[in-house]
Image (cartoon, rainbow, N blue to C red; front, side, top):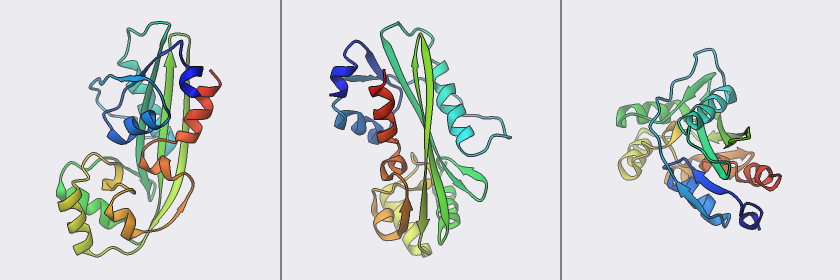
Length: 192
């Protein structure tokens, strides 16, 4: 249905995330994957979805040769805890610290999506509140060793072992926590 609606566009997904790529396949979209290296740096005064909106838009700026038929999708996800953004951990120690900080607390997962064409740009975002049980150091270490969550904001994937055993409650879109607010993206794309 969505693929038919967007048949006049060449859809470019600018994401190396296997989860986002799977969502696009599951939506029945024909798309190509194009990646461009950018430094994910944002002004320090930004908070919450301002950060993800900024970074999703920044990623779109790396694509300066779009045609009128191109539809570029860029996105960014952060974990927001105690008024601070948690991105992707650099190593095991940082992943351990992140998961320890999330243990026994509630946090927000914020994802922004930037839809860009030569004639328009639209940014949408979604926030989901997630609550972790108190995790033991052994559980955290086991998860990091076995799942290597270094490509995930906040050092965890809700769809993995740590999500099965550690998440008490979730308020909002589960898919947003996985990495894309699919319901909102679908609605926006259907409007084109």
